[in-house]
Image (cartoon, rainbow, N blue to C red; front, side):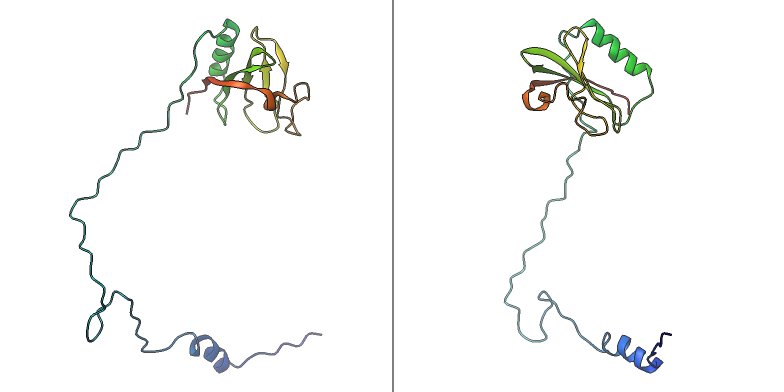
Length: 158
């Protein structure tokens, strides 16, 4: 059986209020004028110019590389636009990988493979995503060896 010891109410109030709060305490800061004499600190005058605000543009608009989009890629973009908007938005990027132009398509969300296509639209591999985040293993060197990144398309819907 447990035994509890309780402090009398007077002791508790003394602990809570006796030490935590003192009456008639004066607080001064270095900028307060002393009762006699001066602080030795010279005051800096307030600025006379009004504050200005610099307008901040809305979300930045991505600069897409629209040069030489193959027909299959235009059809894939149209298919994405016909579907429900994904979160995060789908992106398609162009890279040079193993001396060829490839297109990398992001996945809409969690644990889904990303896709890597050759210039003719044939699926090469899934470089990342899936349950492990490492893709299907068929192009494990993609992230290390990709070059010349260009954003080709990103879903513009918000």
